[in-house]
Image (cartoon, rainbow, N blue to C red):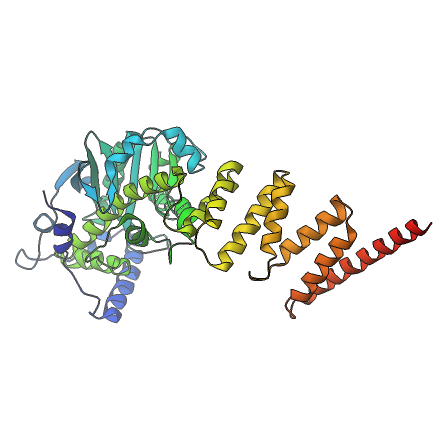
Length: 435
C-alpha cells in the first residue's frame, strides 16, 4: 500500500509559477459561459469532443470505477486507510475510544454525537465560491468501517449527470447519523442542499446532526495558530506537512480545463487534495477531543487559556478555573497574564467567590502588567458597595486615574464622577461621626 508521502509525490499539474492571469481569465470566461448554458439547458455544448490521441482518460490518472445510476454513470474512487498506521502524528484508531456523551459535552454540541461508526466526514471541491451556478463537482466522504478509515469520492465527469452524483450521495447518507465538515455549516451543506433543490430532490442531510469542526478549532486553537485553516491545523496540531498540494484557487480552473479538453492529467491533484482534507478532519476531531479532555497542561499556554474560555462558555466553572490557573503557572506574556487574571476575576465573581475574585483583581492591577481599567473598577465597586470602605475605594480610584491613558476622555470623566461621589460619602460619614 502506498504511503501518504508516495501519494503526495505523485501530484502533477501546473506550478505556482505558471501564469495566474491566464488561469483567472480562462476560469472567469468559462464560468460566464457555464451560467449561460445552465439557463439555456445546453451544458453538453461546452464539452468539445477530443480524439483519443488528444485526451487522457480519467481512469489512467485516478484509480476508481464507474457506477451506474438512473441519471448516468458517476466516477467513484475508494481509498482504505488502515487504522494501524499513523496519519502525521495522529492515530486514527483512537476514534474508537471516544465516548459519544463526552464528545457531545466537550464540544458543546446541540445534538448527540453518536458512536464513531455513525459519523460521515464530508468535503467538496467546487466550480467556484459563490453564485447559483456553483457546482460541487467532487464530493469527498469518509467513515470508519472495521479496521479502516475509508474515503470515497463522487466525481462529475459531465455536469448533466449531477442528479446521479446526488443519487449516490443519498444512498451513502442513509447509513450515518452525523455529518462532520470543516466550514460546512456556512458553505458545503447549504451548497449541497441547493443542488438537491435544483435537481428536484429532497436533501436527506437536513435531518442529520451536523458537527462543523471550524467552530471548536477556533475555540481551542485560535490563540496558538496564525489562522484556523485546515492545513494550518495539519501543520501545527497534527504533525502533517503536505509536500505538494494544489492551491484551492486553481481547482476550478483545472476542472474547467478537464471539461473542455477531456484531459485528466491534472485531476489527480484535486482528488488527492480532497482525500487529504477528509482524513485530516478525522485526525483533527481526535486531537480536539484529546486536548479538551486532558486535565494536564498542554504544551502551549495559549491553548490552555482557550480551554479556560471554552469551558467558561459551557458554564463548567471548575474546569475553566483549573485551566486558567494552569496558564498563570506557566511562562506567558504579560498581556496574556492580564487577560487570564481578568477572566478568573469574572469567573470568581459569578460564583460568589469574593476572596479569590479580589486576589485576581489585585494581581491584574499590578503596575508590572499592562493597564486595564476593569480590575480597578471591580475593586472600587466592591469596597464601596460591599464593605463600605470608602477610603480604600477612593484610593483605588485615584490610582486608576493616575494610570489611565490620556486619550480615554470618557473613562476619565466616569472616574472623576466616582471620585467625587466617594468624597461626598466620606464627608457625610465624617459629619455623622462629629454628631
